[in-house]
Length: 365
Image (cartoon, rainbow, N blue to C red; front, top):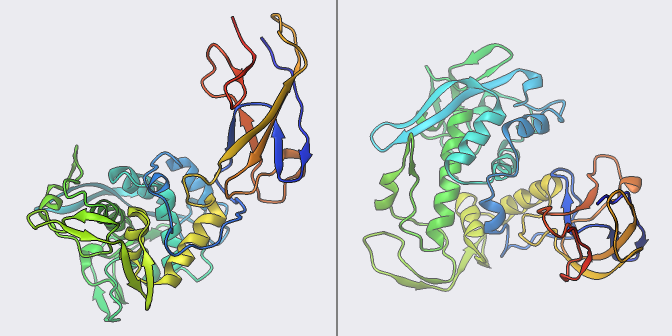
């Protein structure tokens, strides 16, 4: 059976097309959402490791002419290869920023887009709009940079490589230990902290990554000191459980931690402005970090025939309403830099053209 033509039309508040599921590109999505301090991001988005491959990350970075970490501009850094409680993190040869980010995200079951947005929020390295100084690379994720503002100097490190020159020393960085100094060191430490905070804020004291070369078994005895979601939880594995109402004071404002991702982001950056910045960067580049950002509801459907013989063609129209947060664009009305939203079948099996309320339009024998 072949579907040769699809009916597309527009009416207010509706995107109309032929198929079953809604798909949008990963970059440049407009949003109808504004920053909600109680829900910075959802766990389902925070934990989605499959949003971007290494190649897609590098291609994304290369869309910024002034990016400090793009392959187009000759950036590379050591790849994180593992962790042990006694030896800490280990690193291999220099690779692209996309490889570093993807490896760190995969190691700790984190969405690489979370790391990309944090890199931009902290030092602007993705776009390069704030410059590409050694200090920015050394503290790329703002990890190990307390608000106290003390500075440190290090030498003999592999901080990063820029256009064939490996930088090994830094003077006046905010990073408080040499083990955390450098682009890759910052990314892998941050990936761990973000995931650890998400899990512990939801009471999961059994969480630890122990697989392959990654042995974070020391996390099983580590305490947590960040914001908590609502529930009766332990903050130390050996401690007693306590009820937490989910409320924390951020910049003098009471904020409710709707989920672990939100609590983790506030633990990482305990300020409203920083998390608003993260939300805006993520939303502008990848869409709203909510699980229901691309939700839709079924309105109606129609077909030009009751059945189609092999080789025949027909027209099917399905009307869907955008009930999510991201704006949908059609191919023939696409603003510059925005992805088209297309509809497609999922799981092409016995009934490839089924409307969302499960009433078959056309079926395949």
